[in-house]
Length: 288
Image (cartoon, rainbow, N blue to C red; front, side, top):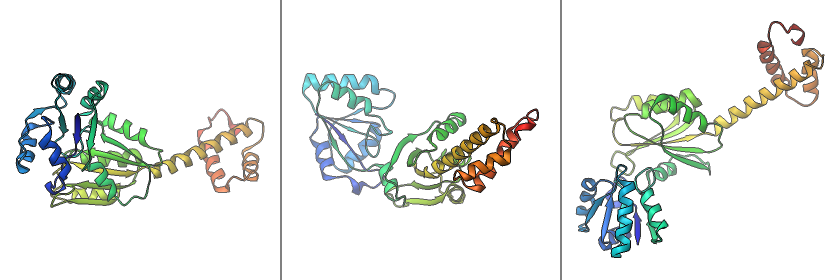
């Protein structure tokens, strides 16, 4: 049996009795960092042997642990440094290998930084996507953020305290001044959540002398980008329709009047006509 065990993200009081019992009773615990996990086990007087399973050895170690479980008939618990394993943390490859080998895998649910941050974000949006850590280099980060735009949902992002300022600035530049919630030190003594637009949260973040401490969870409301993209598509559609009428030999005033008579908003048609005029080449004066 493989048990995927969630552990506290900051407050040891969040360790469930079931998690403690499971870690006591399994034959082996696969931990992201044994040096970190031994402190947790010592606190709860758990003496189960530890073995490391981290991002650098997970591929090979997963296979050897699965063989060990099958050959020796042992039970293993999987834990990460904090929170729920295999979610933006090592463990997914081990779980996959175990299930493919027919080993029953059970969850011992508990703390999750992403869900904790979402629950206190204040957003009333039923849909969300968990993105984990985004690319580090600037170009890839901008491209990833732009690909996230236009969705009517929340985005949950993890970030290092040393890169969160860059992330906020890039969100502002790539997606606009969106509403977001920024959380750190969740469940700890100095838990902090800042809510507001990107620019206001960034300003508050810069004023915080303890900002570079603990990992951050950012919850961004992408629904505003969807509205902006729909407005942009509407403008483009109007421009295309105006151009189509112009190509039939009518002038801009006639084209505008036709769209307005079709029910389009007068201001939107006028703005589209100005934009279209600016795009038309000088050698096509009959179209403008």
